[in-house]
Length: 300
Image: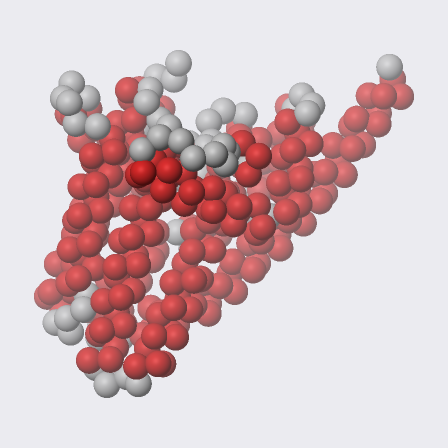
């Protein structure tokens, strides 16, 4: 079992500086305070969601102080979003449903934000179809960006580090309807999420399937780390922290459309670069794995 200090985060190799030095330390204190209580990790997720919904609503108003309060509430929401996973890890109760609920929380907070930004743009004089299309483009880009960085980080933990990582492939998930209505809904959302990741990273998924059928040598892990450590910094520029910062600055500066354009265009271009590098590395690593297996076959 991991020591509690290691349970406060998903893995130092994939965590952002602000997570390791702000969100995780505060979150673990909340998680330890709730540990002896009857509060579940899923309930903490719902706290995060409710605070995030209020925060998103405050961005509908063209008032700097109201937007600033909304930004602060998003930070509080993210602290609880960190604490829920930490509480689950401390109790050893992490589940796919919990991960699905956490993903639903993230999606609903931003869907709520985007709907309020449509209202804000129209109220500011935008032509409503233009406002709708811009927000939808930003929201769709956000969906793929979040799925991509989550896959990259969990794949790094699973393959490069060999410890941790919440990495699932489509074949790992049960397609049958089970559990309560909420559990079935969460499973469906999570399955769609995993399928989206597999579509974004077909060569990486192929590599992972190959690795599951063979033992992974330390030399291969070292090569994987060397190649993918170039990709990890790109994830920070597509992650939730930068997104919250951008929307906060853009709103306070009364330029909320700048946030939407950056997310829809520039962050999407960065995503293309990340996908290209990651998939290129997967191809090279797959060739390396095939060479290792051929060499082993010749020796035996």
